[in-house]
Length: 165
Image (cartoon, rainbow, N blue to C red; front, side, top):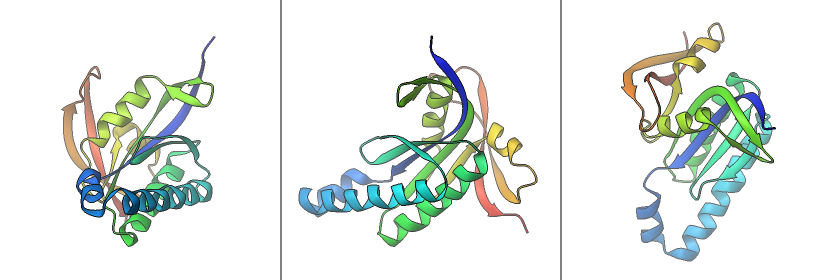
């Protein structure tokens, strides 16, 4: 029997990675990508996140609490900017199916689809995340409602905009 667990999931992605890799060449790109991976793993440990897997030029990670995922995503975006990389992130919370060390389920697909709406340096969150962190001091801007590719229903999308004043 598959175990279902409630988790906050974070996807990250390097924006324009193919053109960066092409301009750098394979060896320099591989070195930069290794540094990217190492730096993200540092932030995951600091934020008590669990690396689920790498996605070539990004990560899928899980957290027990949405505030930890938001802290981690902001730290990753800041850290990657210092490396000259433009990163985007998406966060959703939902029940996931645990398959050994991997996760699956609609919550994972939904977070992955949210990533498509993030631009460089942005963190996109589902309404579920926004609603669950009320009172945390985090601020969000509504990005509208949309249908996510291959995910049933309509979804409200929010841009994480920092700490509320």
